[in-house]
Length: 132
Length: 362
Image (cartoon, rainbow over all chains, first blue to last red; front, side, top):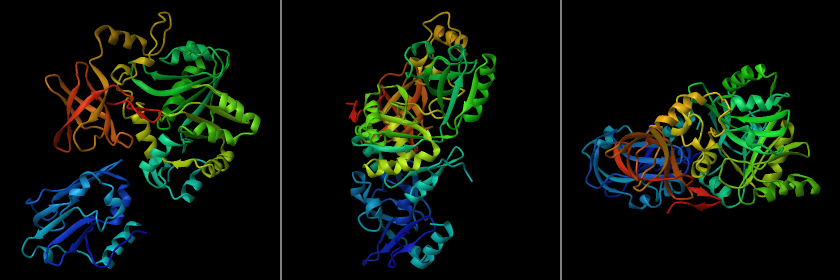
């Protein structure tokens, strides 16, 4: 059974969003997503300054067996990609909600409200429906 | 629902992630795929390969049949027990399958075929066997375990009685024999030493549990794929198929044309090819940039032409991506690969990449 922390928001495509104190956002993939992918061997994160549209592919996570796109849960400007993941992609497996974050984002005006993110309870229902 | 091997229940009990593999529900991994890979390179792992097709060929003219049916020369098998790797070709020189054939006695050879080509192979072999009055029997009563790694033989020999264990450890490379009611072969698909054991289906679960208790790791098809690629071994359906010939698939070394009087299926097509030279060849690639090579990615050979990756993965031993590619014959030592829209640099090498736990790549 995968871990779904209460204090985060989620997307149907298995990204999580954490609101940081200064109103910026941290984004990663969920425990369910990292389990489904298996051992990650390559992660590509976006460069600081890149402007993302909601739903745009913004990162790539590759396990031994497959490559998978990560989609921007909402529009905004990238503040940082996690620099650690180039050398240690497995951090996403071992700490998906912590050190394994993918990017930090300053949301565009009104983007967070428009994103339709799910609560932990709602995301758990998505996982139940997927049999995960 | 897919087909199951005799070990399916045990795989579920061990928490394996089950995937469809050509109509079979098989274990992809039990925990970490990379962990399973390293277990085989450093110690020992066990794989369920019972989905593969074991078939026995019996009859007084079985050697004549195989001389005609196989592209490698069955005449190389001079001592009972010896095994031979060979392609089986169609008339156009395309690869119907690759297989291992074991010489049991003069009227009995055993072949191990790929799972995905089972029906096609059995029909093809059966058709030709009839002309040689050879009886073909699929041995779906057998399970097959592959125990691989530097400690594999020492561990697996403990499945046998004391006297038989000595005989198991004495078995030579690429040889098989009957032992304790099982067929034991010193073969594999990982680039490590080890055994493949064919046994009655009802023996398989106890054998697996015993191996686990001896510290042999359960390993899935995921690790099997990264291990075979590092070891420079082709996968049927990826690296060759009916539409490709052996010389463009890195299999020229298995084509025995020296004996001029040996007529085998596909020979005339291959002779024409040898005359004019194969336009393509298989190479190994090591990715020099960050990323992962995958099958079907386009390979660009500057000033020469284009090719395609046939198998690609991340190599846990080398900690970088490696691949097999089919490229123009004139390809030199550098290529570019289109990886998700970016052109990345790769170096051309001669497989294998890893043998007996050691990198062969500088």
